[in-house]
Image (cartoon, rainbow, N blue to C red; front, side, top):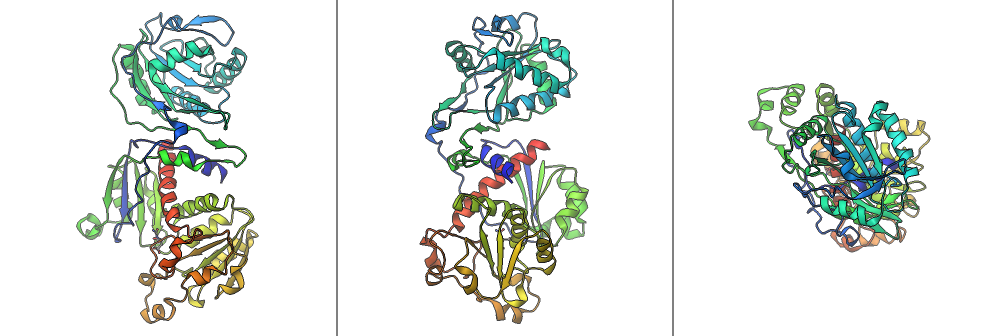
Length: 495
Ligand code: NCD
């Protein structure tokens, strides 16, 4: 789960170069998302990329290559070849190796090889780094690349601050040392340079589409300057190894872009004419890079995924599962209480039809947690799920009242009694309002705990509880935005 948290908080972007189809068949639009966060944290002021297409690299800037030999940048621009410039530091705990790995992955698929059709200059912006470290890095990346002859055309350079700054400032690459974290804050991108050393194109992120890279190199080889591409900016920063996470301030820089085709009213679409789900999915994926599907039938997302070429994200399949909600719930618990292991999580309300609790229980089952299920008899957690988790060794308790479990509860996860799922409305009437969390009830809980709810609420948490610092549901909503952004970026990065 750790890697999820890392990536989730790691990724920030200005725009998402993709179209997302949000298909919510037969349902109305999902609850509106929280406002996008704005404002760059102080620690990231000046960090990022300001495109300087057309700027000329300082070809007389001097560095040491991986063998310790003094070289100038100009040495790599003598043969009418374009170059890829990557600005990294070799000791970076995360993003820099992703940038270089991304470069390796992309060039692996190209016929061009560094040294023949183009050059790669990987320059460390940390003036304390040495050719010895550069050499080690070079060896491992050339090995990974699998074309030993590329060693002649891939240069791992180190140098002093003045020369480094001449290059970083020319290409508009902002980075900053953070004393507390003992790390550089920087972003991820590679730059394509023309044979005379002019900046031609910026490719953002850690995964470079081979076709885009090929065309960018081709254009640069003819001296052409690129037009700005969509930016997916990633910042490598704030990884706090003592806590094993990125601090929330990195979240503040996240922005979501891209375009969305939202299909809520199937009355006017081919679905109303009887189109099957596999056909709808195959049609939608012609227009989109990813499909986010909310569908009233259990198992629909799995059916869609089976027939789709493009990624499908299950945004709720009837009373089945709601995995993205579970991811954001876990993230919320981490943010609110610092850890997951060792906690007691009490789920309350409609555990039978509530898909959020199904997915959350499954995900929590991967941690060392105790689960309490509090519900009316007719709304119990599905027996198969309980049995499955029992087999995994998860301690679970079922009861119909909060009293016996509240004192030991770290997380109270309240759900709505889902009227729309009942076929017998009398049955609904008999259980609606079964549990209402009030300030008085909150007094029975620990001073340090989290009160969560996937929202919407319809009376099961009194509004007077909202001012209780333990009431985490609106923060939970906001975390959901970031978690889903991160998920989209992860999925698109791989797609
Ligand atoms: C939940 C859902 O749709 O399952 N809400 C949500 O994702 N925003 C819970 C609910 O509808 O009660």
